[in-house]
Image 1 (tube, rainbow, N blue to C red):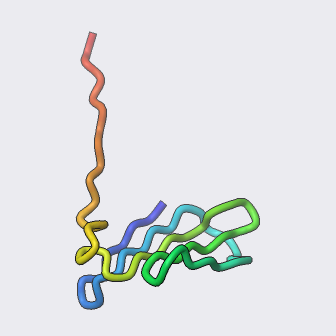
Image 2 (image 1 turned 135 degrees about the vertical axis):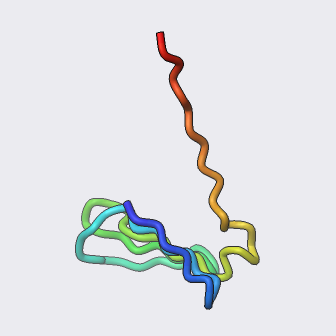
Length: 66
């Protein structure tokens, strides 16, 4: 997985799987999904910060040492 934010044009790119893109789909004008033969390969979000998708909020669960 790779996540890149391009500040100059406010675009968030999330690569989930490598592979040949076989289909592109737009959910709306600013969210685009690219599919590989195995499922979702990439998600591109335009105006990500303006629309509240960036910065990402990632929760981490820490296990307690026994």
